[in-house]
Length: 91
Image 1 (cartoon, helix red, strand yellow):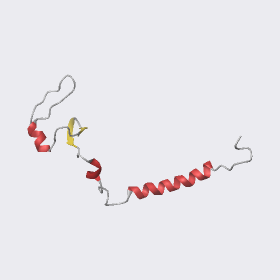
Image 2 (tube, rainbow, N blue to C red):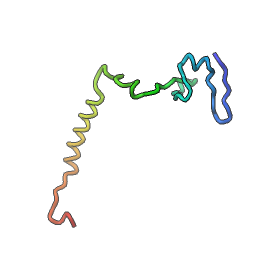
Image 3 (cartoon, helix red, strand yellow):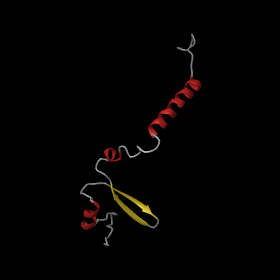
Image 4 (cartoon, one colour):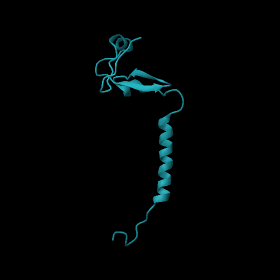
């Protein structure tokens, strides 16, 4: 356990021992969140896209569900926004 002081600008220095234990490097982004009545600090990966790629391989495919929904939306748009040109539509 460590004690730190918040500066007048709201800055907080994470003690070196804690940074080392968490693997936090200089300039690395961290996630700050409130859980119940305390703050939690979690280091974010350097490349979040690469880190989270494939995280949802188990279970249903969100991509497939989104594509299916988009196809349904397109069908609806064609019904609602179908426009047939008339001889005077260019005026």
